[in-house]
Image (cartoon, rainbow, N blue to C red; front, side, top):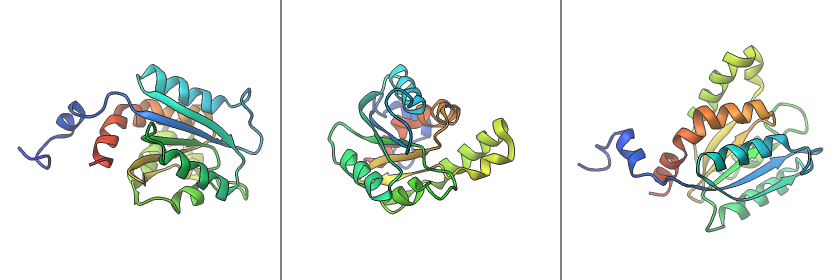
Length: 172
């Protein structure tokens, strides 16, 4: 059987069980004591058996966000970069644009599924989220909203169940 014939279950069976992750909080106001979303992401990743290779907080400045994502993706111990914050529609929200410009491939299904799940929790306000996922330098890059509840939803329902599978496919 070729890998094309393999089922998602078979893919998951051969996927890495532990993924090295870098968590980047994008915020003009958060600091290590108030970064609840970054803390939620790190806690959920660790509890699921993944490694947090590093984390940082950066102001919502597109050039700085892009630089930190590129730097994280260049590290051997990082296979996934998860950003939280800056995905809304205010004038200061620029994570989407900063990350979008870096992506070699886009996975629009992630944002679609995230907004669908979010709609079930918060209603029509879910359409304001510009959560996204894609590939940069054969690394998974995910942009999540700054809300701890949104981060928990994305990790519990989408990322943690598929992270190893995503990495397996992105690194082939």
